[in-house]
Length: 338
Image (cartoon, rainbow, N blue to C red; front, top):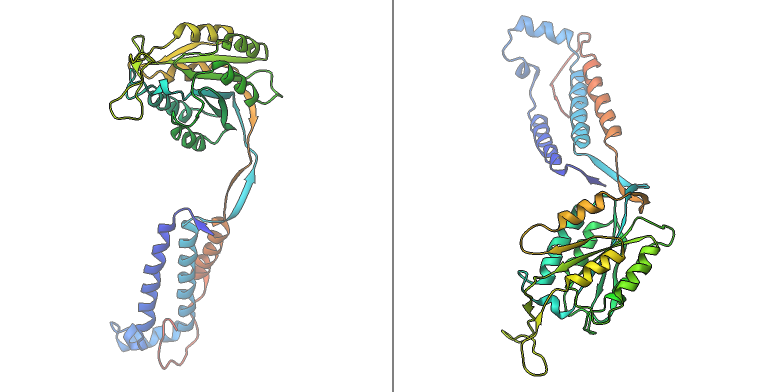
């Protein structure tokens, strides 16, 4: 059992201390009616059943006890129900080659891409998301899911050293993206290719055309600047050099990315230092036709405050209707709570 508002249970301690105090505060009839004269005192004793008062007080105590339990929101077990949402299947294909460490976009191309994608995923609603990472080879990193928290955790762990086979194979990445989608749907499928565009193989446009024929939309995102940037290596303050010892400048190839997006019947975007680029992508996804997506069954605790609240109500009503008047009785000593 758990409670939605477990802090309310602290009120039970206050109630318990109060009733313990009253329990030990025993006194005679005269103590209870100490402010009355003998005539009034004798009259009340004949008219009031003090045992009934004890029962009445106990009913009040039980009513308040169960009312506090109900107010804390008790939850027992789990309840399972199916959830349906409207959305699209979004496969993010993220470049993790060493050129994504270039800092022409601060703090680096990969860090900028992760920052924008993080905000994009947080704003998704009903869409399924998948992540593919690639460099010289490509790998399905996260299958399609509506668990955005898990997607964010996976995204934050992506680094440029996670794929040993370096390079940039856009065609391999797109081919892997084709396998990430469900074969049942002929549309509602979006690929978001996030890269600096340095394609080392050159077959990506043909793959994008094939994907478009299968009902997919290929959007591309260029990460970097026109002037390019140096590629840092593991050694401090060192940068990648070519075989002749010259510094290698990595430049964004926007032309190839625009051609891929055109072949894939999608749009091209640009992650830069100037604006929140994810908003353009989000607007594009929101304009798309949505399909009904049946997600995993959603489990939650089943609230049980209703029954406990009803028990509380019964005790409280009982305390009000329970009679306290009676015939003349002989009393030796009154114990309000025994």
